[in-house]
Image (spheres, rainbow, N blue to C red):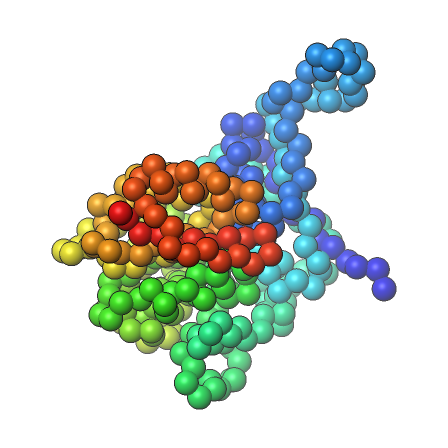
Length: 306
């Protein structure tokens, strides 16, 4: 039987192309990029260049990727991309072709199955499945936000969070999406968690999930990275930043002011080809890498200052 695919394609102004690439690589690292900014006659072969490339509109570009039609992430990915592109505040046109149903936002739920990462069980809020003995249960309905526990970037952080969470810790979750990491930290024993995201819909969904899980010590805040995050006495002992490499680099200079001595930061959303970029920025800002985890093309790093 031939595999069915869904194409996600974003067309945008060249000035926004790099940002769109960063957002789309959060979902799928294998991107098809049409970037004509540097298109011109080849200095070696002169006229032996496709005329369509030479005449292409250099002010526009596009990025595309493909997911299997039955991927559990595919329907939620469209919602995530539309919200992220709206947050960019620019002209980004997203088209999704090959969808199998008009009831897209509801149908994805049938592909969302319980996820178990160590002793953390991520269970869909609409299922009645009971926890196994000794499990920490997080019940999720991602809605309009990214973070179901099925994506590598989320699983990588969840696999490390319990190992670096001190007793009675304050936790900062930057780019919280559905709130999954803050809820997990709360249930693992954090004293307080601050979950922030630029996307107001993500903050709303995170708050709803926090309430469903009874996590009264999680505060959800709309913030462009740390711009609206409160500094607390003693600083945060654990930070989770499941973003993309370029945004992590932008976050790093301001992050130390929010940290307690010895705090550990978990950075995820890093496509393997961008790992060097993040490592360089970590070193520049006084961080040392404690641990590296990888799943498929995604990398997560645990790091501390000094």
